[in-house]
Amino acid sequence: MNRKKERLIKYLFTALAFSSLVFLIGIVLVLFKEALPIFSKVSLHDFLLGESWYPTAEPPEFGILPLILASLWVTAGALVICVPLGVGSALYLHELAGPRQRAVLKPVIEILASVPSIIYGFFGMVILAPFLQNTFDLPIGLCALTTSLILGVMATPTVASIAEDALSYVPRSFREASFAVGADRWQTLTKVIIPAAGSGISTAIILGMSRAIGETMTVLMVAGGSAVIPRSVFDPVRPMTAAIAAEMGEASVGSDHYHALFAIALILFLITFLFNIAAELISRRFRLKLGLSR
Amino acid sequence: MKRRDIIQKIGFSALFACMAANILFLGGIIFFVAARGLGALSWEFLTQAPRDSMTAGGVAPAIVGTFYLTLGAILFALPLGVACAVYLTEYSPKGWIVNVLRISINNLAGVPSVVFGLFGLTVFVKYAGFGVSILSGSLTLGILALPVIISASQEALTAVPQSIREASLALGATQWGTIRKVVLPASLPGILTGVILSVGRVAGETAPILFTAAAFYLKGYPRSIFSEVMALPYHIYALMTEGTHPEIQTRIAYGSSLLLLGLVLSVSMLAIFIRARQRKTYNA
Image (cartoon, one colour):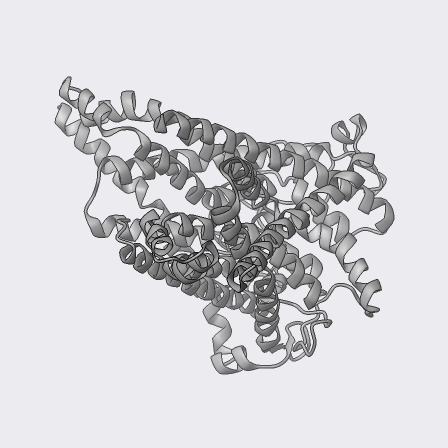
């Protein structure tokens, strides 16, 4: 009786444990099911590379290249900010901050990483955008540049905290060996520790990228929303996430527009999925290289 | 000074500048929101419903809505998340299962929030027929909180020393008895950390509730779990993008932002504080 109960409980836990897998598969199925109908109207090629997104025009046009490019532009811009700041902060924490500074700065960075995206969007809209508009004398402050700046600042704590974890896995013996052959601290940092933690740092950057490209509320509020192929960083843009969030409310259920928005979500999901798998593979190799188990 | 000393000095200064910029930017955002938001806060702001097409009154229904949504999400995600963590650490299954589960948890954590919103719209709002409601929103947010709760619980369970489990088994307790009476109580503070962290995450999310729960304006408070709700983060978005009195609405949005920011930051500070104490206990 008792043994039977034990077995039952174990099965229950096993079943519940698969919930995340079930949800992940559920998300994939829902996205495919709701996205596929659009491809009977538009070919995959025209959908991905079409240059005009006029989903409500007559006849509608479903080319999402402007949206994809907008996402890539603002993400690339965000990387220019969050990679040096994030990795630099991680190196500072690892190499220069004393134990007392670390004890304060690490949690502060973690707390900053929890600021909701709507707050960043709000800040971008009421303070940064007007400021940039005045400074650069722009026709409109809500543009790719503003979005990149905000996304970059937003992703910095994520990058910093994962990169710092990677640095802390580098064994002490590495730096001691480097000092023993006469290297100073800077040489040890750049020639020994950074290469040793290199793949861990790349994981941090990929996850920061994943966060930036999937970010919704900030870009919805700050990017300006115009669905044309961006020509300069001062152009207003409409990244993929913003298009979904802004248009889903208006698209009637089951219409072509509705299915097209799901198709955008599917592509977005696949991009972040690839990023996450890449981060997973790289960090596994990194741990093997340093002789750490999972 | 030798050349390499100069290089080291420049390098270290650059690192310091990165750290300072990081703290300064983020601190600046918090400062701006706090400085301008304080003026909007008042007792009336916290306790009254919006009046005169969003230009007067307070945000009480949005506070209540955010509370319901967060509570619902945690009620859904906590048992699932803890069960998953217990399975991964206590029932030590075969290698490939652990790998598959870990990869799916990591990927679930990386899914863009708007995609959760679409999933919730399709499955909960339409397929299950819950409509745009607290229930749909809570379930959607719960899935989003699941990875956070799993990883915090896993960390807490792994930190419980193996010897305690062995002692319990040696006294004749069954595996389930050991988990229920020994391992789970010992890891409770760590699991609590996960819960608090996910409260902070869930309370601030906007995109998942856009199509599953949120309403721009409602008369009065939600009556059941099948009602639409107002929520603080969505309220900020709505104030900034709709309506006809941008000046006054921005002021209210500042107040709401400060409220939300205060809520989320104090919640995550609490979690980090508890976790730091917990880690100390086990390392000592």
